[in-house]
Amino acid sequence: MKELIEALGIDWKLLLAQTFNFLVVLIILRVFVYDEILKVLKERKKKIEEGIIKSEEAEKRLKEIENLKLEKIKEAEKEAKELFLELEKKARANEEQMLLKAKEKESEILAQAEIISQNKIKEAENLAYQNLKNLLKTSMLQLLKLKPEAIDEVLISEAVESLKKQKNEV
Amino acid sequence: MKYNYKIYARALVSALDEAQDLAQKEKIIKNFLALIQKNKDTRQLKKIIDFASKIIYKKEGRQKIILETARPQNNLKNLFQKFFSEKDIIEEKINPNILAGIRIVINDEKELDFSFKKRLELLN
Figure 1: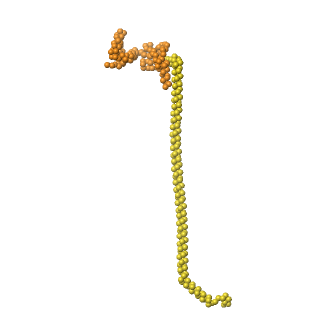
Figure 2 (figure 1 turned 180 degrees about the vertical axis):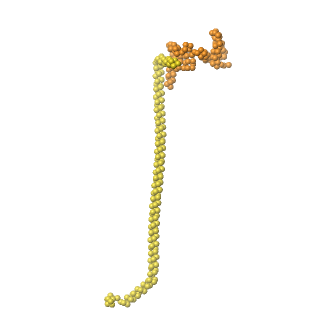
Figure 3 (figure 1 turned 135 degrees about the vertical axis):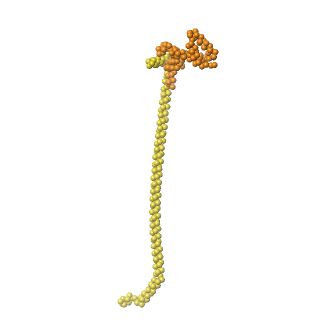
């Protein structure tokens, strides 16, 4: 063993001195630096943990906000849809009402047109009847000019027949 | 004082009813005409005579029939006589306004219009 240590070049004294130095340094570090470093590390760890927690909270909040946003969007979409349906319903009702009014108007116009048409027909009939009467009158007057005696004979015969009939009835 | 033609006519008929003979009747008529002249009612004379005739015809159960034609007709009275009583008085009258045909007026009340004018009016 001694040979091996010597072969390796280790000096016992030096080793002990160095070990002693190391221990002194270690004690000094332990007493003066370790607690401070530990404290700093702990604080840092705490800060990091707090940061993480805050970050998680922020993320959570963000998600909540996102959810809220989605919810609001959904709500708005729903409201918009309802509004749209309502408007569509109103528009249909209006359309139906307008259609109904248009039909009523159409019926009214048709009825008026029918009346006008009937009046026109009546007017045309009256005019034709009047023309026919005038024509008949003219023809009768022409006939009167040509053969007044013949007309006398016919009308006097009619009078005789009428009186005969009256006498028979009595 | 002015009298209505109906009053004159009724008075005349009433006076004639009381007359005993033709001479008396003539006297009544003469006096009546003088009264009309005195009252200056000669304008009403035709109306008076017509109304008096009406009253007399009614009393006697006679009718006055007027046959109106636009121009003279042959044998018109005979043609219509058979439809009326022999007592009835039938008169012929020319009225160019009826244009053609005949208009029979009975007692100025009833009318049978077979005139051409009436036919034209019916066309209006």
